[in-house]
Amino acid sequence: MAKKKYYTVWKGHKKGVFTSWNDCKAQTKDYEGAQYKSFATFDAAKEAFKGNYFDYIGKNKSFASELSAEQLKKIGKPNYNSIAVDAASSGNPGIMEYRGVDTKSKKQLFKQGPFAQGTNNLGEFLALVHGLGFLKKHDSDRIIYTDSRTAMSWVRKKYCNSKLERNATNKPVYDLVDRAVLWLKENDYKTTIVKWETKAWGEIPADFGRK
Image 1 (cartoon, helix red, strand yellow):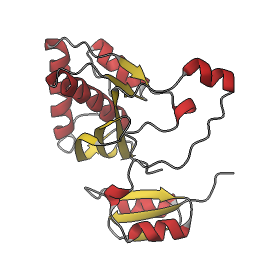
Image 2 (image 1 turned 60 degrees about the vertical axis):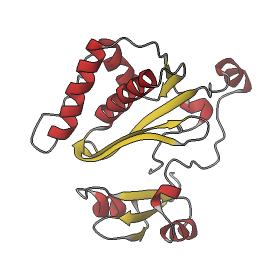
Image 3 (image 1 turned 135 degrees about the vertical axis):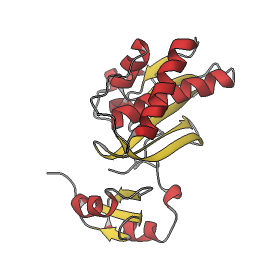
Image 4 (image 1 turned 90 degrees about the horizontal axis):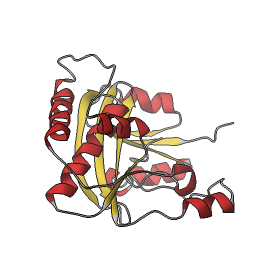
């Protein structure tokens, strides 16, 4: 049985602390720039509501891997000479945003959105290409972590295979997608893209920490 969670909504149709994901979703769906996050206890959610959303996103609870010691040893530790990228979408499609952070410090390096309509896969793809461009611009030898095999595949193929139909609402997202695909076709990059080992290390540092 899933553990009970409580949801703080800093920006939404209604603000406050909610006791179910459905209640939280009702306040944040179709609300541009919604700010929300889950907490393990009501007191923690209530205390967070007094503070700032940006003090809480991406800050994970303590993580204990269920992998064996042998498996963990084989995987090893993250390479901290890196950045990590991730996306969040409230609904699929839904309001979407993405960002990149320094893997060790979790300092935010770039962020785009929220956009009125997108998908998690589109956000992960855009985050990864944005990260590649960011590292090339800074002539950096850092690697880049993503937890999306789909995004890695799309980048490798230089093609976005989203099933989301284009419309006026998601035009800003698809404008970025078209730019990203063109960038991949016109640019070489030396950055190594690595799959983040969630089962060994917990959520990727760029995670928005909402659910």
